[in-house]
Image 1 (cartoon, helix red, strand yellow):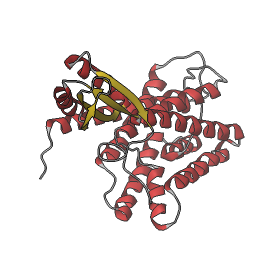
Image 2 (image 1 turned 60 degrees about the vertical axis):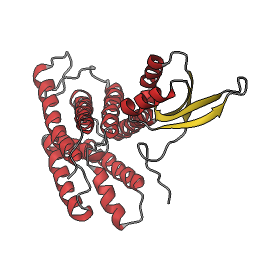
Image 3 (image 1 turned 30 degrees about the horizontal axis):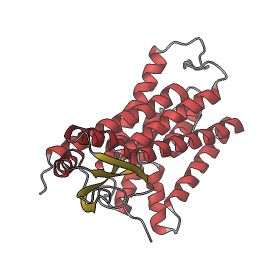
Length: 305
């Protein structure tokens, strides 16, 4: 049995901390902006919101029940492919959805209130602004969760089950589910504005989510020329957990032999690498460039049919 190293334990703890922060951002957006202004979106949270708007049944319990049923089917049909992080996210999301609604409804006082006594933090008639802010916070939260290899379950599970038996792509299936969910809110409100707000929310969430995920995964390439190449390579390998390739080169002007280090890393690691090089050799020559994609061990998996 593999015993996790200290670095792996730290990485897992960090992942769970960031997943929790992402879930807080997502739940905060629902409790403060989306629910008081009766805005919905896709996913199981969207279904739960519609049930809440129609019947008053607490959104967190609908979310938990739906995901528990979906997870049961997923384990039976797909096998135990959904990680512990997904289960953790479902439980924590249930708790945070309840917590923020409780805090907002009991401790937040605003001049404008809904007919059932919920505070409208942005004031009456600010539905679109609530949609923008709420969707941005939701996208931010989901982006953080996905960057830490987490998932909130929901329509991803439905899409995976259908994809197993039908020749429909996962992305197309998720989109179809979200369109059906958002459109169904018309039967609750008889107001097409609510449907439009739902699609605007979905679009903004997707835009912010893509930005967060792509920013975190953007890769850069370094060429480092230094006489202290061995020390630099050792520290980069140990402290950033990135591979280093050493090439032999010749300086055309000096006709001297030089060693060239090639490093592929995430953009967020750039500052750390620059500091390491500066500490060891302030006179090192460094070239940094952005790369379109990096595939393989330590980066994205190569997906070619």
